[in-house]
Amino acid sequence: MAFGSTDFVSIQLAKHAAEFLGQDKTRELSLQLSSVFSIFSFLELSCTDQGCISIATAAKTLFSRAETSPFSSSLMMESPVLFEGVALSPDIKKAFTESYPKHMLSEVEKKCLPPAINGESMICESNEVEAEVAVVALSTLETVKGYMQPASTIEVPTPLAVVLCNTKLLAVQVGQKFKNLSKYSNIIPLTLCATVSLQVHRRLLQSVQKPVHVVIGTPSRILQLCKEGLMSMAELKQFIMINADKALEDLDMRTNIQQIFTSSPKNKQVMLFGSQMQSQTKKVCFKFMKEDPFLYSDFSDTATESVEIDIMN
Image (cartoon, rainbow, N blue to C red; front, side, top):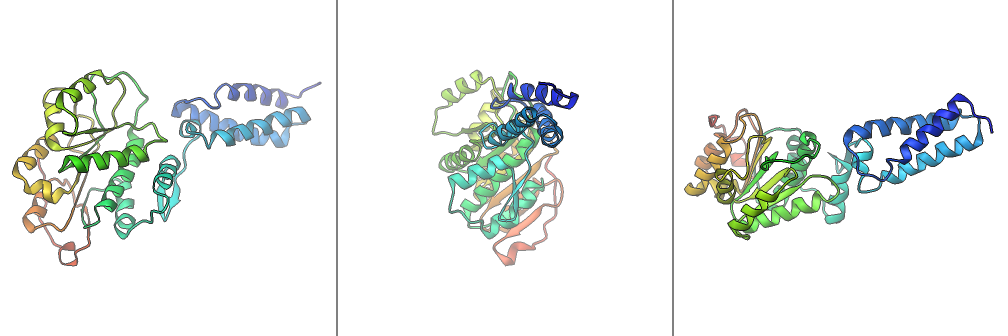
């Protein structure tokens, strides 16, 4: 059987691609594999030998199958897909629709998800805590994906996002939401609150060897572990509070929150979610903002309230 030069190249590419299909590879490889897929599409049309055409067609079929596997995010470059008008990564959308098949986006989610994913800081006032948690989880996972580095051994966890909750029960619920929505990605969320003893968390953080990307928990537990040098906020990209109104009205909790905030980089996205806030509480919220935040409120009388921004240093 005689092969032309184009046929020979396609066979070599097929052998090369077969070594990687179905394996968990890094994003660098995804660029190579995506290019290989495009080449196969061309070769399928340009080859002169039927056997070579069959190889190219089979390789394309394998790629299509790999695209639906749990490793698809590392095999092919991800393109955002629309979910009720909101652009989500395929792996996150898949996890979301599987975990919450009957969920329809609320007004809070429709209005707050796009700016949150776009990296805007915000203050959101709503009585829909579940919707706020969905905004936090989806936008945080999308943002963290853009900052993740190849896995390597670490000295102490340096999360890219921290989600502070005013109660341990809320922290557990939010942590479960992150776990559900990250199951098809390489993002690692960790919940830290008093449902587990401090000693257990100490041993856990001392033994962690892979990066922890998102930390969810109560301010007191997270601050304690940071003070002990078992975790660092030095690489933080997102600072988030759920039930911020209640958390900031508790003076001891507010002090803990401020210490965590000031231990992180100045340039970061800040998102504060809560119910209808008192004027004084809202002023405190604005102190966390470096620039004008996106404002959302279900309460029309406070939606456009003007508050002087005072950067917290």
